[in-house]
Image (cartoon, rainbow, N blue to C red; front, side):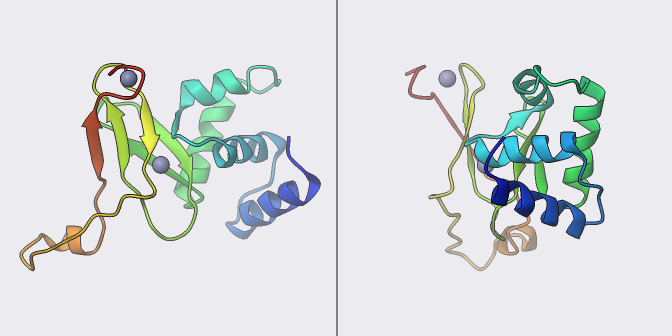
Length: 139
Ligand SMILES: [Zn+2]
Ligand SMILES: [Zn+2]
C-alpha cells in the first residue's frame, strides 16, 4: 500500500463516483495507478493473491471502477479485457506484441489527423489505437 495521502486521494475519487471505498476496491485502483501497463483480471488477481479477496470480488471491483470511469477497459484484440487507471482526459495508444501478447502504454504517441475525411469517431478521438509489432524482448 502507498502513502497515507495517496490512499486519501483514492478514497476521495472512489467516493466522488458514488462507490463505497472498500479496502479491496482501493487496493485494485492503487495497483492499476502504480502499474505502467494495462492489466488483465488475472494479472490483478495474481498481484493481490496475498490478500483475502477472492477473484470474483476483484473482478467486480474492476468492472465497478470501469463503469464509473475511474478505470478504462480495453480489448487489445485477444478478447481479454485489460484494465488501467484513467489519468487525464486523453486516451493513449497501446503497443501490442505480436509474439508474446505483451501490452505497453504509449502516452507519448498521438494520433494525428491530416485529412478532413476521417470518420467522426476518429476526429472525436472515440477510437482505440493499437500499434502492433515485436516488443524489445521478442525482437
Ligand atoms: Zn513480446
Ligand atoms: Zn495505457
